[in-house]
Image (cartoon, rainbow over all chains, first blue to last red; front, side, top):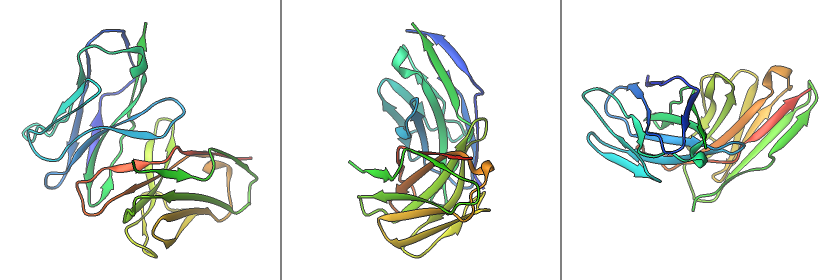
Length: 110
Length: 113
């Protein structure tokens, strides 16, 4: 079945720093790929997605590109804000089910 | 916007009680899911349903059952609650077929004492 390996957290950065959260996956075929975000005390929200190789998903200044060759979907943001503090999940979709890892907790200090 | 609503944000139940967690979605989605979220373990799939009255076990179904009598409602049942079922429970729904994202409710934090 599908699986995902995400950069271990917690990750702590200063405001305006550059962010990369690494994500690699194993899957049969070419699954859709998602980044979900969970803000403190809330449920999960879709941050961005890509459905085929070389697609770039983007939202709220975050970007991730579907790399088939390296089976990766790394999340990047050029300048993080305190409000970006949350847990981030890289999620491949397989057989109609989302496959979650542990997530990466991100804390941004002012 | 899709809305997935879980009936309670916080619940406290006693060991041995039968507990019902309710989830309703308003976008006619075929698929519905129940996950639990625990520190250090991420989200783990308990059960999912891809149609009315259809259900499939996820990764950790022991101690749980589900009911889907109507398309918009998916209930998670703890037959006899135990302290190791204290957790955050998340419901989600999605359109079939594949390649579509899931939408999540706000979560229910269940404490079993």
